[in-house]
Length: 243
Image 1 (cartoon, rainbow, N blue to C red):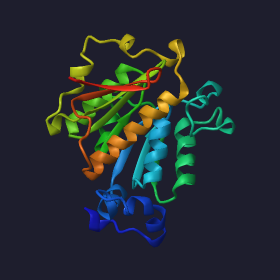
Image 2: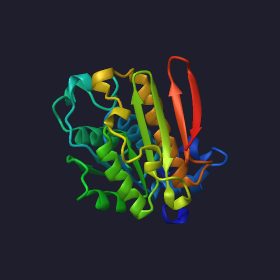
Image 3: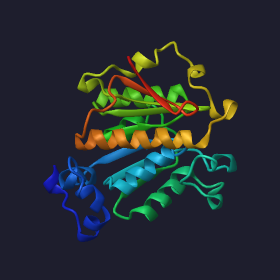
Image 4: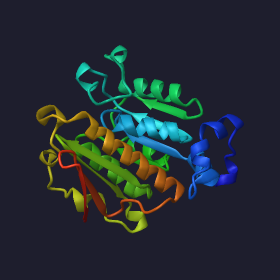
């Protein structure tokens, strides 16, 4: 895979800190360049995930979000600006990613994820990141990922805490329903609108989501398959649960 995606001289300078990194290097960077990621939701979690994937040199990024940027988003959705209020989140996120790294290919979808389009979206990606805030969308994305054997990086946040895990049943991990059973409702994913969210919490979890995606693409380390990493901002602590 690596040799099929050589780096240009400009890319070699851009990714210099990756290329000298023992255990990562040119082979991993070329895998990143050859990879396609789908980010579902360009909000609090999608923002840092998109920023770090684009900066790291992902080859192709599909961003889907049917929402528009509002003033109350800007306290945590850091890739959007005051000037982008009222515009599509997907388009705004794409403009940010393109300005950060012109080597990243982009597909921007200003629609909702549905059972009708999820298969096509997931099928054209190597890894999926889901930062949406409702279980119905999450289940649609998870079902498509499981059907097509694609790893799914899933994050969630509320108030002062957040969590991240990787669903990859095709790699021997538990399915989405192991953590979110069919009888679970959106009450288990408290809404930021109702309960609030401290902005940097989304940054912590979104960056961890990007890290897990990079690990899955490059084969680095041990992904969070079957493990739920929970962050508590007030205690400045991480805990891990198996499921």
